Length: 377
Image (cartoon, helix red, strand yellow):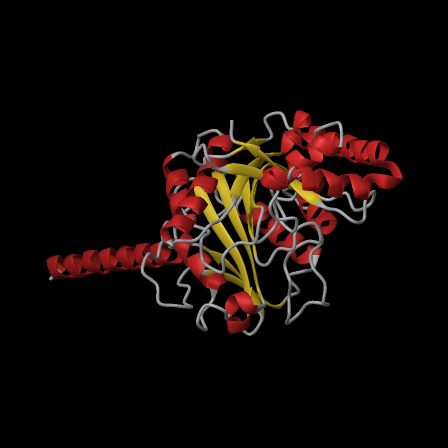
């Protein structure tokens, strides 16, 4: 009888221990990574502003969700947290934080990653919304290094992140973006990645030069496609968490270009080394002064005359970004912004590709804005 009682007591204790272990295991299964109990090597943060046509333009499905699903192919891993803030039409405009787990096979418009918070409706064009997200990530997922991805429409120097549900009608401007990062608990990110059009303008990089070390972005409009390719660069980061930050930024660029080519699309995506932006800003200022000083009152006529002389290398006067256009301007004005470029542009594109920078000197010359390209060294 005592043996039977002892047996049943032992069995009950074992079952209880197993149940407790199972409950603890289930509660802690949030997709891997470091959930605040320790310092991760990387925290990757996606700010997905989908309260606009990006949430519906893909045959009724969401590009923003597809971008997050790319992240779910890898998910948070040991030493690497992946956190996403997603606000979209399909979610009623509610903004949610997700701890991205590994879910490689998802149905359209479905996210399986654990939801951390439902914030209700938030204006994604409000800098406080971005600042709060960064603060949350710093508090709950501290890391040695941070990457911020801003995923939405981009307008270049005017800003990004249009919100047609909860917004006041404007964009998240560049000064607001800079201040949101600078005054957050993070204060500075190692890599700032734009999945948005036109954000490789010099104005953008110059404005944000103090809040990130490297910026990956596109000079032109990006195709209406999911080409963020986060599965490619997160997969690389998972196995190379101690690699140089510049090497990681290179991989982001390579991955975006690879995914675009796979989808038979073109993207002019590049990495900018932000420590060189002060030099470039000074060179652009000098270039603008040269245009004004050398051209004087007849600068417009000189420009047109120069274009006619160089017509064989400048076939399209309406071209927004052309190395040939810069050659024409160089012939008209004695001076070149290229002397200040240094090692600013570094990409992993093939050697026949061009890394690009927009610049806009409308303050001094309202009739012209243009851009310069420099062939990859």
